[in-house]
Image 1: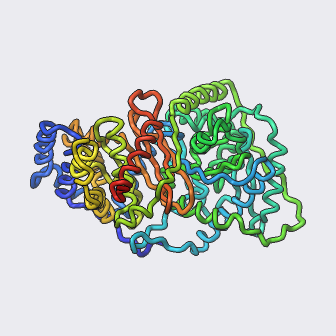
Image 2 (image 1 turned 45 degrees about the vertical axis):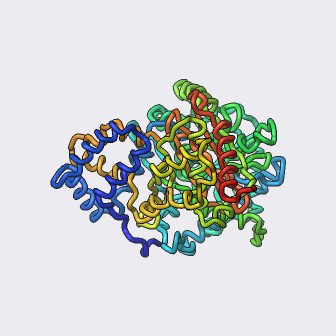
Image 3 (image 1 turned 180 degrees about the vertical axis):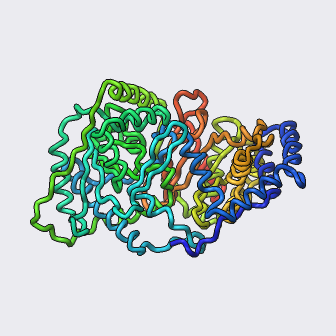
Length: 590
């Protein structure tokens, strides 16, 4: 599938270090910058530690399929001990379906299951079209790993189990309703899939077997701090019944969460509530018990027409997920031409758990901790309708760069300074490539911001070219595989791998500041009105996702309530106002 895709290069050392220094300029005072420059020169000198580590990385690149991906997944995801909901798993909330009630919920759920199975059949047959970005083919190796995979907690780090690559690949999904899990077989003994009407019939049977929410919400355990969940997981594994039930969930192709309705307060807040529902389930008194956060793919379908997808990042990432959702949206309306055979199907298997006092205590603690986390997260989803990506395009500007400038300006307006910002960029143009960061702001952008917010500077002073070049150079470097951040991480991990002490450049206060990502941003590469949502990377930061369509832009902004300085609502207002002022700059009304 990825024979056309070249290996990811190790960027030249001096180029990365110079780009790193440029990235620090707007963030730290001159005297600190001078100190960091001295540390960097020592690191970069000929025959020094930097050159030695660079040689180690280049050797690693020659001997592995990708020199950074395994390290990145291990360091960024599997070694993180933070809970998966909010801190790690991104959610995608899709436009509300035009229905209300459990009957239509199950009809749509059966259509969605069929669409996902058809996508998987194309994937298995090698008929998934090769994807391209800017004319370059992309690595497709993530796709087969999306199905029948699950993250498994461990004491010091997690690992990912892939069951779909074995000779006897799983043929079931897990359906969860009212905190109860069911194993739903989707294929007949001859390998043919169940028809849409057969699946619908099986979902009706599941509904009839899961009336009450009087069962312990086992899924809540997966929302815990990873070390805590790892201990509870080991306790669960001691019991044969629990072990079999957990394995059925882990091995399933994907999970389907049949949620009760999202509490509707007002139309204005509904979009935010809907996104939060997919992200974390809304709390232990709502639908959080209908999740198994370790599962790579979880489709969430509410009784009120809300729906979306929650995914685990160690295995999945944005663009392949967007492709899958796009396929579902285009195909779930198609009538299934296959006629259901008259053969009776076995009852979907209910997954039972033996809950002793210790596990009961684990569940109670997890419920408390998840509700605290959920109550701490402020989610603000809104649709900016004044213009969309067509406006910057008409002025030969990149829509992504245009929105990034607006976000930096809005942040400055609210906080009076700029901060380390990472915009997520794909590296799938390389074999087994994942992501790197496009860094903002540059010194050039900071000058623009300071002039733009200065009332004594006339708006006539600005021209469109001021907006053109900001993140573009950095983006082009990242697309060449010459990003800063994965390379710096690789040098640090190479030192650890060789048993050396961590180089001074990484112990420097500037490095701590440069990687304290107060703004985590991401563009959703979708053709639909979907909204992606995830939590901030740091306690005093924001996460901002945006989905530019031709004449509008969807935004989601999250922040933690425990931080007095950050407020998702305030930043949202500033983003709207700033976009309008940039519009005025491009097309003055006077």
